[in-house]
Image: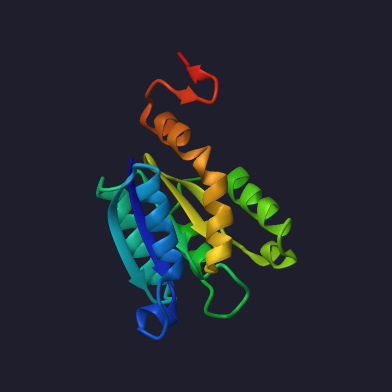
Length: 165
């Protein structure tokens, strides 16, 4: 599976902060045996976010795009709005489950506005910007993404109960 990691942060893009959350996604991808086919850091700018998501999904370079950052309540948090413009179909159960897991650790997880959905045969998931929120989100995705991508590709599925017809 080919993964794209898009960190959305004014601070990281300006060099004021390290990309801890993007690095966590990278480690998870490596540990899962996935290929990181694209990685970028962009500021909290809606057009830049949407353009990057479109380029990666439509260019056939990734199967899964994980964004981190820009899902909160501040004026600059525009990731969900940019993502919504790019998605063709929603996958709300994924983002709902990520929030449900997060609120078991902190009530602030309920403030994440992240989305999940599909563009073509690519799954796009918004993760929070905090390293702990990313860790919680990746725990949810670990059991889902291979099956989800198989479904999007029209391949025989190998869910938790073995191969399906």
